[in-house]
Image (cartoon, rainbow, N blue to C red):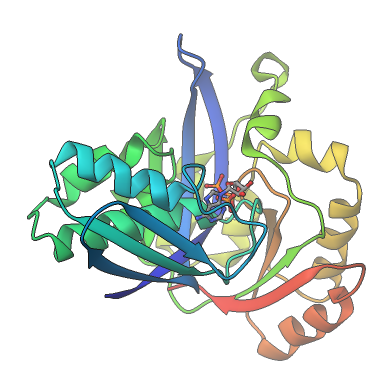
Length: 280
Ligand code: ATP
């Protein structure tokens, strides 16, 4: 069975508190992209085998697709095995939920292959055990994600917008970005309600005003090159320009294909990975 594991961007990311167990309480507007990894899943006699076309991605227990398969096998007492082949197209450690998307695809694929008849809610509950972004990756589209990622509410679709992704040659670990975040130093949170209102009115200008990512405070300070990438995209005509998730990917939303292509050309340097895609 062949599945598409789609990347996401954050149209906003707010951290509104911290639970006693250390998890951050989030408020994020998330958007699925056409960009995807390809995941091929097949039934085997026993065990879990993961392969990946990129040698820098681990294929043992550290791979989140492996963890997803193991979780479901234990949860549903599956006596067979599974083989998972990953063709990676989503940049890694980039803030694009590449790993989470793979995990979501494995849960969905195994649900079909083994005829588990799990509901979306059951899949999302299982997904949350693997990562905060996995429940959203199962739902997909345009969503408000709250809590520690478990409260997912679908919003009016924000489809067919041109998105340019620029991922510099370095990665940022999600743990490091959140670790450097100081909640008590934040004096202005994201106005998520206003952002959603602007989205409902197809008001891109309004969206660009309310579209913010609080982790930019941490990551852009550490990596000033990201500020110049943002500036360059804005100069090329991006309407919304933001860091996705915990970074370091900077994305621009364009209304003009030619402008997006010009920006892509200008930013294709210094080892940057540059990808033109769309919201779906
Ligand atoms: P998120 O936005 O969900 O935090 P990310 O895009 O920041 O995700 P990932 O691409 O998921 O980050 O990668 C984070 C780390 O997880 C990397 O160090 C990578 O080696 C490891 N990893 C484990 N499994 C996978 C996978 N299937 N795909 C990509 N990375 C994986």
